[in-house]
Image (cartoon, rainbow, N blue to C red; front, side, top):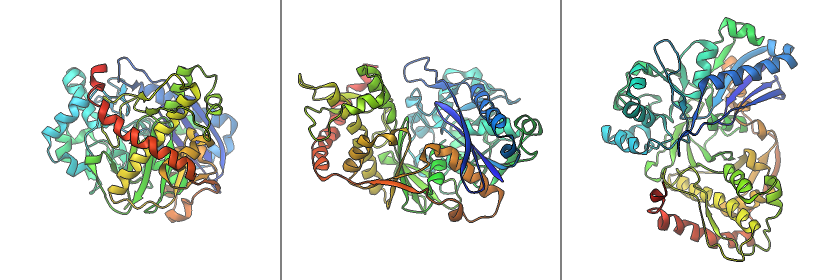
Length: 489
């Protein structure tokens, strides 16, 4: 039997076909475009998600018709928080407002004014990235759209609607909406009412390893998979990545170096710390929760630096960096899209502090890597202050390919970092594992084992000492600049 994992990311859709031995048989990726019609806005067309998904699966069908015809279940993962608004007929009313959209900062304050128990119920502060404030923005700025809104779906759950015809979500993704009572793992009528929606606007809920629905007959025929193939609840991208990495037991953690950066740790109970902007969400597995520290710009900072500094590739820029003889390295604040943990400041901006005539391009590049590492170090401190117990930390995401960054991260966090094989499949592999759990009765720990260990990067004592000096400057820089950021627009 085979299992299909579909991950709807921000920059692409990935479909991964996995066999009974959990080997990746084949995969396909189709790029997506992010629209930014105004400063701090971020939108996508849900139809583009569906077309990209169909393109991926059709490509797999052309290359792997036999394994695809043997699919026992499908799992879904995806970017969190996106607001996909549907009318009574299931038609999309406007482009989806994404997780990294910053337009609804004022609406966050309004949401917490309307429901003063918001942080108690959800375990999280209201942030512009979350889903519920976006609906208040739509109500205030596009009232005709809001009046026609009968369903609100998260991105991966829109794909589920197209695949199965059912409106269903699961706990890990729903926890990022600010409509879920996270401790109870159920929709909160009070939070839904605070956004002037009806409870019927919310999809049904299931756990990530449960069957949510089955594939529509026409989709099954088009994709060459069995009729009535079950579709697992799946998970938000980070929870699904955790399942793929075997991060499923309390104390296990991973660090993701994607477009954004995430430090994720599993908890055996609901452990909120909303005042420090730590996220407290449900895991994609029943009876488990997790905490996250999130920095909104991680590997995307390196892409920005490559373009800004005129380097041919990110790898070329990295080769210029000297760790042993750093020269005149400034401090970089990596807040290119605002920031979450620990500042919760949508108006925050990126900044270099300490540039001199002697500062080189290599120094600026190193400062960018260090700035993201310092943001993770602050996030780690926040999670520990929240009561998290963190054992091993695995590293995943596109930025995990950088060995230089690995040395900086391990030294800034003062913890060894594990790099495991197969991490490039990320959330899609976790989605395939959740599909397997939904299709059978295997124990979670038997399916969700950590992939083989490739290497461990330990902190470097000399580098750690050097980084500590600049980390102190980094921590002082944001409070000093905070009042200036809103003036920059």
